[in-house]
Amino acid sequence: MADTGDSLRDKPRWNLGGMTALVTGGSKGLGEAVVEELAMLGARVHTCARDETQIQERLLEWQAKGFQVTTSVCDVSSREQREKLMETVSSIFQGKLNILVNNVGTGVLKPTTECTAGEFSFIMATNLESAFHFSQLSHP
Image (cartoon, rainbow, N blue to C red; front, side, top):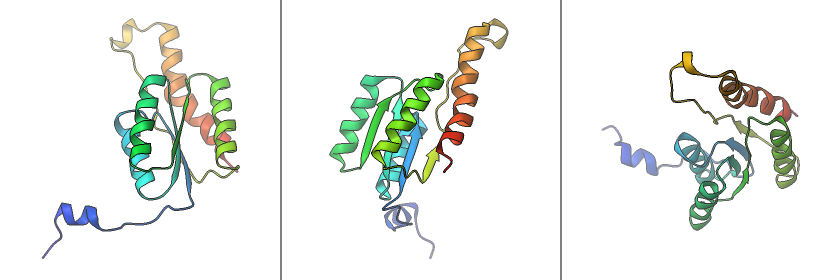
């Protein structure tokens, strides 16, 4: 007989103990779920978001669950803030980063034909440039 979804969730899959992870955009949605999953599997996780209140609320929830999670406020559209975040992550994890999840993303809620050049630049810096830059910065 096949396992049900509930019984599969209770079975240990793998162990990420001793591993470290950075998840961008971890305060809500998919990013929040990824942070929780990695932490449940034993990884030490650092995550960031633009909204300080939201990321602090998540941090309290994760601490209550016993997860090893740290947080930073970071606007990933800013090259300087990305570099500062990676310095923080390197310090917290003693230079060891095993997992990078480039999750952050944003958009403008209007037709593309109405987007300004500034809005387009912000979207590209957040959604594309940040993933490229974080990948470069995290390479050993």
